[in-house]
Image (cartoon, rainbow, N blue to C red):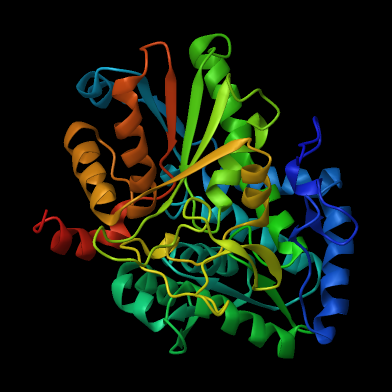
Length: 410
């Protein structure tokens, strides 16, 4: 059985080949990228232990990103469900409206330290692209964003924001024209331009170093939350359930990072994947739907595949969760039985959005609406001294057209 090491950040619990648990992660990259990746590994290992760099990061997190974000009790939702107390960490309060700003900020700081003038990134829901375009503008970097043509159509508000920030959006017409194809094209571009360009992978996926940088960046969420829980309750409650949506897995790792050492009976980690439309066989839930181990975007993880082992198409109302793979760290947490993974269908996520917005002054995007769907499902079955905390990691401004259309039909 895979075991988690105590007091060591999960991002560092890999072997010398970059694998968590001996089989998840790694560096499945072309020969031409070995030197750039090694250089980035060396630079990041120095920067993450450099007090001046950490102070610089924290300064931008506080004065530009807007840390800490709110931690609030959802009184009306809790009373409606008549069970566990439901709270939210409102990460969507961050500059730009989502957790992706932490990773984008750190990557731009690294790019500046590396002397790079250009930065490229991938995006699905548009939040990773929007945040990278904001950070690139802030730090004086030229920015290029790869995005599936399908996602460009359904996430217009974030595309407009990227263009306003001066970023070039490169539409991807291959494959399913969604996030998986955007990541592939972004990596191909970096292979040819790595001398002048830094690449920001938008989630905790890809070759080992990109998983680590993203995880290190988003762990700010749980550092804040840990202090806020102690402040709100005076001590750590006996039973807490931390619920987060999981696509690539960056917000979930950031939300859980400081709590992985706690016993499961004390703090349970629950990840909610995209189950897709109720009447469709397609989904984006490799962890909860029994996907097999595969290689995707430079790393080994559980991947949605067809009978021939080819990457399967996915389907979800949420562009940010519409991805056939998942972070190798979440695969590690699943096999170590530290986290429980389930899924919510499109319809359940939409119903959850409808209920939350009716009862609370909160406007979660379709991604965290999947997490709220699980909270709504389990809260009535739990005692009132159980604390459910949902990471409301993005706002729904980007989803306004989808919501307007879909909510008419349910």
